[in-house]
Length: 529
RNA sequence: GGGCGGGUGGCGAAGAGGCUAACGCUGUGGUCUGCAAAAUCACCAUUCACCGGUUCAAAUCCGGUCCCGCCCUCCA
Image (cartoon, rainbow, N blue to C red):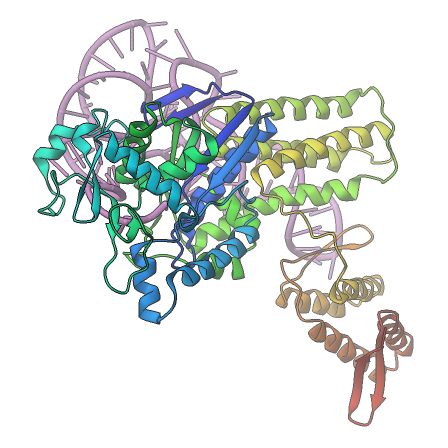
């Protein structure tokens, strides 16, 4: 496998032991996360899934920055306790990330729970001459770390000369950064040898990553805006403490842009993830985020999500076709020949290409391309071959297994919640039957009316030879469905089509819905269960 | 100013020396269908920002020009 390592600026062969340690910079929790924050989550979740697919045991750590200037500022303005405030958004973070199908990390360490380790590390840096104290604040002495700048590709001398950073008179050099900051009145603090205060931003990641993954971390990831100064400083701190290389492979994702401008909180052009997830299925959002290579910029607008939805639909449609084609309890393992064998070989070939693409710096865009080719072969096979043939069944079954497996490596086939069917789902077949009989009787105006009505409520009907297929992201309220059925029943009654009217009544009764005819019209209630 | 990365069809996006420049969306025509939808089959870049160069061979390498984004300040 190869990765683009920010440290070397080129793709490198990944030399990994069976057990891989991975650290990804997590959010500072003072707000709901936005779409831009979601990109690294999905990207590195996918990296993790793929490494596991390739047989590695991955220990995945993602931190929460729950002690931070902005958190303190916002919490103070709202008159809340900063840690509780941060906790609230950590909870919200998990709600959003779970919904997006981001697997939880093996550990989610928080700054507030690692004060002792952080203070120890700062102490070590002071002892070794990499840091100095001034009036209760501790700064990192950048000049003392000769490798400083190796990640972001800048030289210490240039930076010292440049001095664009706002200058704190007390620092030895403008580029020196805070390891420990003494608390101002009204700010939370922790005791330390220097002052009552809190850590600077960068030290937490150096400490927590090495704490859980050892002195040298295999993969460290984050957005490319973290390269400088955050990750540069992490290296300076960690390597000064341990004397060993901090990270072997640095991975950084590109940004999401809006009208070609970086989506960011300061520009105010961000979209809150949960607002998007209210409207767009999570797997579509995931698909959108990985359909482009992770290092490329990704422009956002509603049209892009709509395109993603259509594209993903094609892939998921193959899943539906496979389900319709496959016959349960037909597992006759056997030699394949003819078309069945050709499909099998084609799927294997594409699977190999998928792996080749992912092996090349996690090229999800290329990998997805091969998934589409797979869908194409499967669809063609299903359209042309006899499902009663057991060899075809076997070939389709194998294809389905591979196709689903690769899709789940990318996390783009949201596992259909296999739990209890809602009442609404049980009512849909009723609509299908009404439509089917209407079609048989050539009552196309009723058949079309049903399709249009369901369509206007977000349900698409596609007719098959016998039955109809439904597609929808969300069902309308059960109430709406029932009322429509009552309306139809009323029309049947008016036309004296009592058999149909009774069919509706009886079918609803089977679902525990009782209809009562009153002077004012039909009413319904749910039977007690 | 310094450091990264990029400019590929109507749109999105792969490709990084040599098969017909993947794949998706959109569009067009055919099959299927009561009509649709889905599926299927076919078509849709002699050309990869521009100009030079290297090479038997360049979208891919080198030099130059023009654009664009990001980082250098909290940011994924």
